[in-house]
Length: 482
Image (cartoon, rainbow, N blue to C red; front, side):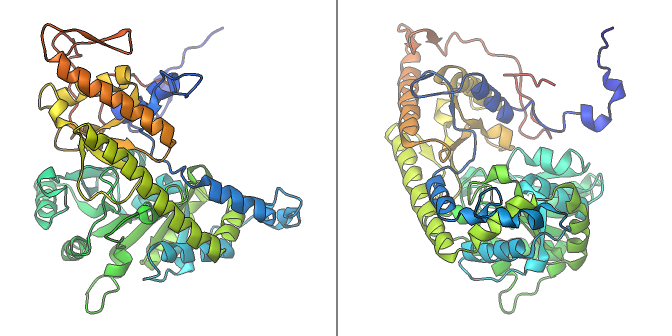
C-alpha cells in the first residue's frame, strides 16, 4: 500500500518557507546544478558566479598538508593521536584548537587586538554560530536591525527556527551604501511605531555583498548607537582576512578597546568562521566570540547542537599554530584576491559596466547593471536576471534577493573559479552587452549562441513581482522541491 505524505503530520517550522530555498538567490544555484559549466565537457553550461567560496589558495594548504602528515589522525604519522581525538570531548573544544583560533583571529586583524581563548564558542559554521547567538539574545517576535543590502542566508540563519524578525536599515547607493546614524535611527523608530522590540543590530564587516569594509568612524557611530539604545551588536566578521587593499580592516574589537571610549562590553559579540578567510566551508568551523560572560556560558551549552568534530579541531589547531604558514597564507591570499578582483573589474569596465566604488574585500563585486534594465524597477531587475541566468548562462545574484532598496545591482563572485573561466564569463557578458544594444534597433534580430533568441522588445516576462522587502523573497525561476 502506498502512502502519501501529509504535511499536517509535520511541524509548522518544517513546512514553512523560512529556509528561503525558493528565492532567486538559491534558484541560481539550482540552475547551475542542472547545467554546470565545464571548459571541455560542457562549455555552454552555467558558470557559477553566485557562490562566495575562496579557492584561490588551496595549493598552499595542500602543500602544508603534505609537509605535515602528523596533523591528521588518518595518516600513519598521526594515527597515534587517534584514540585521544576520537573519544568524547567537552563543549569547550580542544584547548589547542581554541588557542590557535584565538591567535589566528588576532593575526588577521593585524595583531591589534588579543582574543581570549576561553571566550571562543564553537558553532556549525557561520550559519550555526549566527543562529546560536540569536537564540542567546532574543525571543520569538523580537527583532534585529540589519543594514541593506545583506546576505540572503540571514533570513534563514537568523529567523527560521528562532522566530525573530529582521528590520532592514535602508542604505543607498548615493553614499556607497554607507551605514549612517540617520538610517539606524529611522529603522529603530519604525520598529517602535510597529510595537516591535528591537534587541540588537547585526552588521557584516567586510560587507557581503558590497565587498567593502566599514571605516573606523562608521564603526564608532554604530557602537555609540547600540550603547545609546542599550541593544546588542552582533558583528559578522567572517571576511576579515579577505581585505586585499587599503584601507585596512578595522574590527569592532579595536573600537571598543580605544582609550577613552565608553562601551558596555556585555552588548558586543563577534561571529567568525574559517569558511571564507581560509576557504574551509566544508569543515563547518564557526565561532561565537562574546564579551558577555553570561552569553559565553549560554552559547557553550547550545553549542552541543553544532560542535566542530574533534578530528577537524585537531587538524586546524596544528595548521593555525604554524606561524610561518599562517603569515604566508594571509599574505598570498590577499595578493591573489587582489589580482582576481582586478581581472574581473577591469574586464567589466572595458564593457562600460561599473562596480561599487571602494570595493577592497570579500570574494565578490557589487555590479551595477541599472543601464541595462528594460525598466527601472524590481520587475525590470528580475527580467534582466532571467536573461542572464537562462541565456547568458551566468549565475549572478540579483540585488533584490539581498534586500537592496534599489533595482539593478547584482553580486558577482570571483574566487571560486579559475582565470580562464572568468575570461569566458567576460566574453559572454561582452556578447550580451553588444546584443542588448543591437536589440534596441527594431529592424535587426540577433541570436545568443546560435539558438537562443534575444529580443527585448518582444520578450514576454512572468507577471511575478518580487519585493526586496519581503522577509523571504520568492523567485519565479524554479520552485523549491522537497
